[in-house]
Length: 219
Image 1: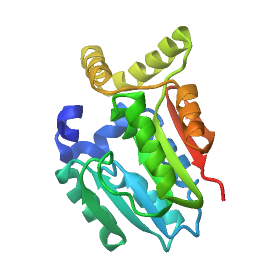
Image 2: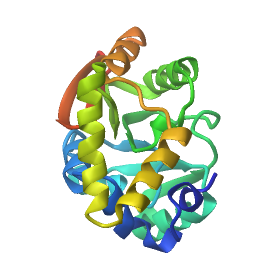
Image 3: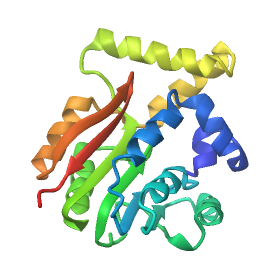
């Protein structure tokens, strides 16, 4: 499924509309990019989209290059226009393409599309192998609370954010559709999975259902 179909928008609207869908979007991407080492030479971006996170990472690591992977060919063209010669873009599923060696692997609002724990663990293991010693995996994504009442509160805050730009009916329809298509795991479960793959994960930023996790590979 293309990004435009998944979100129910025209792709040209993505960079504007994503802010109406995701609370704290700018703050989350800034927090993720700040975790990239300024000396990083190669950044791998999984589900690169329009290149918003990569652009921020390249502003931090001024000599780095990006390899970006996405299954949506149209959105890759938008990333190419945004990032220019500092990016090599690969059309394919990040579960299938070969990962280059990297100093940092980043992903924003991408890995929640992986439907099972086993498949996500496999991706995490491949990320671990691709990272150079001391490298870091940075994931900015939607994660839930384990406690049901807290999770409902998080969902309410998300719905209220969407309702600032859309009617109550539209907001509820969007969240229901995404809930059927996406797979949000509790943050604690994500941390345990990363630890099982050999990472040392830390929660670097969190607001409601959204978190930035930095998982480092030992030197």
